Length: 132
Length: 299
Image (cartoon, rainbow over all chains, first blue to last red; front, top):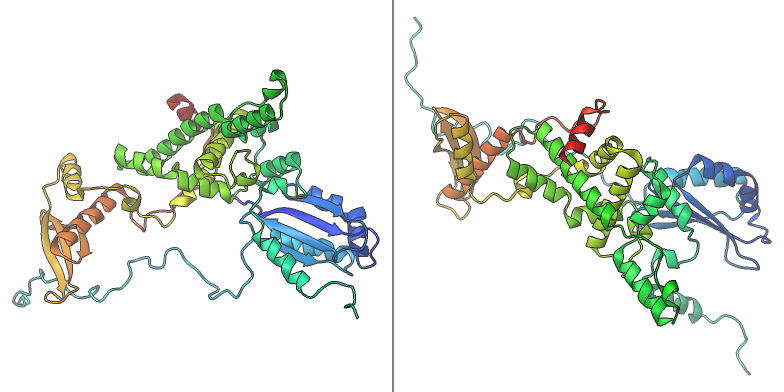
């Protein structure tokens, strides 16, 4: 069955900084709807007062990866889109995928090896039968 | 003149080093943690309705209770305050283990009717072994929610916690849903695994002879089918097993004995129906009633 890989989202922002305006609007308007639509993601909202680091959305996944996304000077809708994108991701590292295909059953009739189509030593080559 | 006050250049590197060298801590001790919300999210993530108090008792391990009582005694509280009101998860874990074993054994008996009891037992033991269950539990965030004395939680604690979760599900939702849960999380761990990787068979030829006598087929005759590089360091022999001059199975090997053993294993795989090209497992919705009743009756 499908298990959402996103465990929790932590929204760290400051209530007075100018670039956290989108984050504040997100918390006021869209955060509750997002939490209701994704009941298996725990959303933590933690405002830290005073001048601090930039507003960040921290996503923790089931395999342990923690991903920080800057939300400075982003609008509320953009933060919603970003949050849904993080919610639909898995926690695997975002690196170049070497091949866009993978199969668990690489061969159906048996993989070829140098002896596949060679006759076995037990087959006996008899004299050719004359047509009757 | 004194240097200008302000943040030093080495400060950032020093703070980064402190952050990297800090000892690993439980997630519950880091900021932003709400146990009740996490437990609710856990039940939604698995798409199951749990009774939350049963689920919370499922996460409590006996080592945690002991360590908590010891800590309270050390802090000098009264005898009444020392005794915790929490229950263990050992009962739930036992029930979960019994149900999981019975259900998996029943699944395998239905899917591979030719497989003998020892083979089914080996498969079930593999699926309920410590490494596999703790791996599944780690990837479902059970290690954050489980309350235990050591961090990181040892594999037997994770296994007991996950089996207790299955027991809690059994109590809350009934055997059918728990059966579907066990099927969805344990059986995919068999993908890509070969039967004889899981089941150690010492004498495959003897086992094959027993199977063939049960089916009234004559003893197999091994013959060399193909050979390559006989006089080199790496020869390859293909030995075929023939019953009544019809081929049963063929297996490769480095020496003749190894090839014969491999051919016996291939023949056993074919007889038990556990080949690589068998039909994949059926994950569709089960028919009502039958599976659950059998699981309860075998409990």
